[in-house]
Length: 140
Image 1 (tube, rainbow, N blue to C red):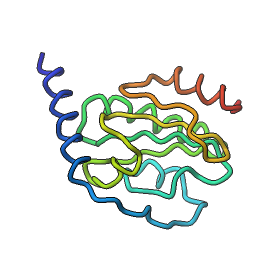
Image 2: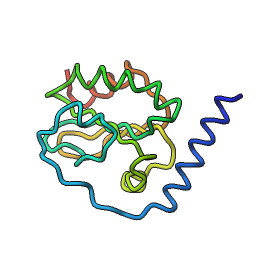
Image 3: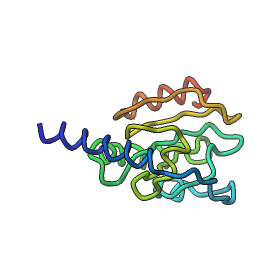
């Protein structure tokens, strides 16, 4: 019951942030950003040009988001140089929620190498499901 209340509180806080966030341009960064920078929680220029990109949008303090942290870290290392795996903390960077059209966290967005959104998932997503989606996008 406590978990459900915590998740509901996370969702309500994010909705409030989204309603009060003002649009903001993404910070311009070098496209050769490191895997560790991509999962730092800070806003990045995404999707990464010429690469399949998965963006996990959440918060370091959100329970389901924290459950995804080790998965994101592992995949970031396993796919470095082949897939851009990014994490954005929308509690620390509130404007990012509206930029990506996110109302609930965690949300994962998958982009093809041309920068087109191909899939969006809301909630916890296990490692096998992420790998399956990357495989569908042509990553081996």
